[in-house]
Figure 1 (cartoon, helix red, strand yellow):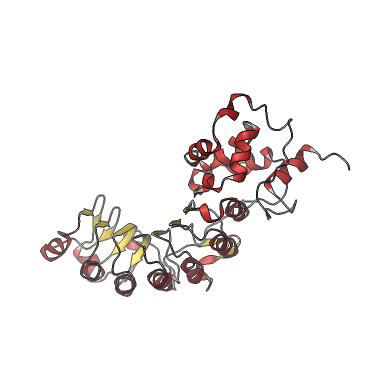
Figure 2 (spheres, rainbow, N blue to C red):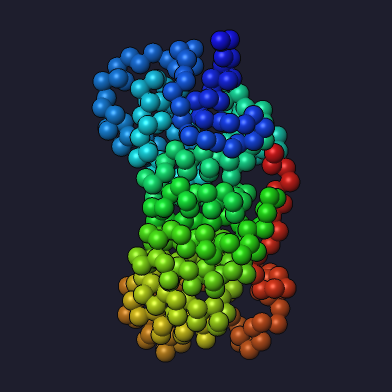
Length: 337
């Protein structure tokens, strides 16, 4: 049998089954050569359980690109212990552009001698296979172009996720926010406790319905974009026991705000930072007095003119909403390979 090249050994180590795409099979395998991994030295004296606990605290980029190459024992722990992959926080990957590509993509391709098609969806599939049921957190950066198929794959492989933060719902490889599968995919995470959306999309209400029906421990919702009366009603109807609500760069009128205060009886945190909203009068202040944390830092209050005709023109107050009221926008990802 012909000796494998360094490039082939690195691909096999990550379980790649395609040179042209980041499609992965069984995750890490045991093919690593001494010219790639250095001598173990004193590192072998550390118990694997201790190493796994340490690696949990290491940033995701370092776990992927640096830690596996320190020594064989470190690589073995990463390959064999799913506990190392409890947190898949894509915000820890370097998204700074280098020659039109995210720096992480450049480093990934160079480290593993990979010259095929790179995608964050492929990375998600890889890590979902490696972490499996041990994964508790999946947090995407705003501009990560994740397909609905990759998200569904992660839901199947990582059923124990407790924290999920989605990227923009519009991307180069699909309009995830308009895919009818999105609510049901999110509903597969039965243990979900915290959910964040950068933009609501037109499936927002159905997502709330899935969360209320399938996620008994759900307690925290973070969203951006305008919140109207019907969406506030959906929050109170489907998530009446919610504990924490975070609105960022949002638009909130008095009626939806009152609806939330009246309907969410167990609310402990109402975060209205950087929100354009109706100025709290005595009634609202009275209703909010029972909430432990009522944060209105950097909130801009509507003028009388804006509050009288609030839905006429969002652009006048710095918000843009598409014609189908999805609160979203098209994200140009054309320079990602």
